[in-house]
Image (cartoon, rainbow, N blue to C red):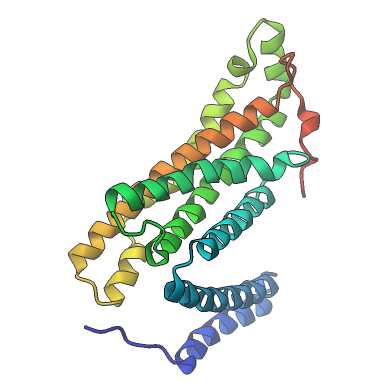
Length: 267
């Protein structure tokens, strides 16, 4: 079965449902209609621009253009990680911890998957690289943001307990060990839940897209399994890196708790 193309009118019908939801939000005084419309407009502009950019990339397969798009995706993801934290790190650390963690996890796992598992030639083929990297960055971003937010909030709320452990002779790692575990657990819960319910409660996006495009269901299921396993490993490695770097940043070279390195919490 060939792919059925969507017309502008088809998309307008779908957009009308979002407008209806915004109207209901306004009528019920929920206060989210403005953000909903802005988000819908942003997604429309971003996806249309991405479609145009990918068309050029598919035609040229230029490694420089592909690399530029990948760096831009990482830059935006790093900003989103920082924006989602209640108590973010001051200075370049607020942005750098999330961006570096995603680079170490998402980029390395993407290259590994393309070279050793999918074995596409060349490995930077945009048809495979950009969607795979985008899915990894999007999900890893969520896990890292949740883990870092949990780390900084708990460190601030439990500062007396941490400092008491330090005074009793504990190292910085021992003083914050339980908080790091809780933060890592919180960062991994979303992807664990997604894997547990995939196919039973929800039909994941990768599999849905391939089925709609005409791929055999079993082949779509195999690709979805591959993606979910890669996302799980990327989220785990990224969260580990972010929590370790972030927790080390909370202490100085004399192993004193330095909550002044965090910005004030946002209301």
